[in-house]
Length: 279
Image 1 (cartoon, rainbow, N blue to C red):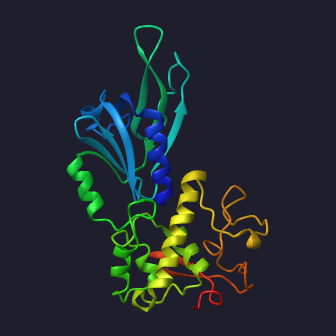
Image 2: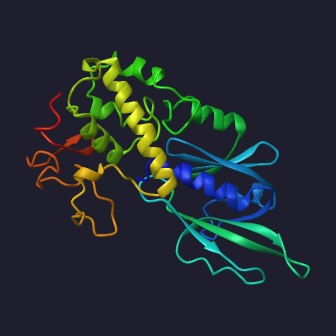
Image 3: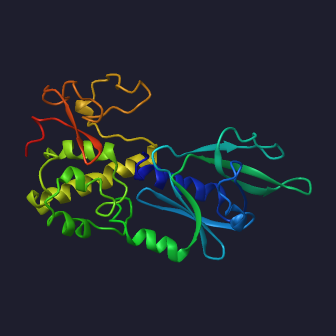
């Protein structure tokens, strides 16, 4: 499932592509029937919170997208005067920026095709506020802070590994950031939230703020400190990021050499080092 940095990066890019003018919105797949409500409207901007993306339109309407496990966007840059490629496969929503061409038609400069989302529908700004209100603080929100999350974590008997994945506690943290930030902090993922000190959680929060911001800028998850990056090929392929523990079960820890372990925690696979993560 895409993690929070992916949605914030998409919000930044979609604002760059579409803000300031009308857009064409269609549903080649036919399942997003509400597209007619925003088709041709002025695109104000895009925002994200946690794993939710919002396209904000004139008149107080927004398209709410949650990518879920399988959703993703394809992006096309179409030169002036050329037609975009025909939709391929199950495209839930296509958005095209409109630019005045040399003739009588508007020509799109950018297109994005949305495939496989868990959610794609039109809501109003009150609905956007309702979504935001049920989520925990987002480390990528400069106005958010750790205190609200800490208030819940410090009283909880659930494991910190589970709490970091709870979007009502923290918004945007997924399985990769959960595993990696706990390793970097040297924290046992099975320790109850109430067993952490405020300083330990502050370190985790600050690390998430830094790491996820790098993710927005680069489009990838970068967690390994230079002294621990041995240039090895990740399990998922040479084009994938190197990790400390995520999907490295059975491999040697980069720091201590012990074997990385994995277990199922609240229906998601957890990865950790039993030697480094005992503090």
